[in-house]
Image (cartoon, rainbow, N blue to C red):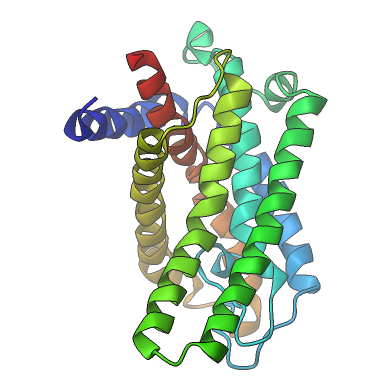
Length: 266
């Protein structure tokens, strides 16, 4: 499959999944988002922050910002990975439930949970644990390079690559695992599959980031304007659940479509 053909099909799938499943899965995605926010709140509770780290405006701040600085590793940096863990559970349920047989009916949380077995949870928890260790190692490697590389250009390049891996390694590992668990075919990992998967994830992740910035700056900014600073953290976290829930079907498409297209091609 040519890259241009793949991009066309991927964009079509983004539009199709939102048209088909956004409203029908809204109850499910909001439920998963609530669990995700509880987990992130626990990470915040036990995280250590550098005094010079970026301001934390709400729980949404932890999805697209890294707070580990210098020698201080903040476990809240795992917030995005925890979110992708819940997206993977959602993706497995959506794939297995065959929602096209129940068109125009709202899908329920219980229907999704019936599609998930203990083996799925064990695999996904294992990937979550692996991604957590990998994130810590990459952070420490960046700190090591800063202390030992005398070439400023080389250090900057090393930082760019470690930062990129910290963002996309969990997305790709969960994407590959989710597709393997939901497919009857044996997953054959090739350079082409990894490249196309990265493109899909990059496209939606960049959209999610820019859309979040827009919504938080203009829409949430307008809503929060009359609210006191102390309450803004909690209010934005609450209304931000709808924003995060909105991303579930998009990440589902990005994590599965490229692999499905290449497998069908064969």
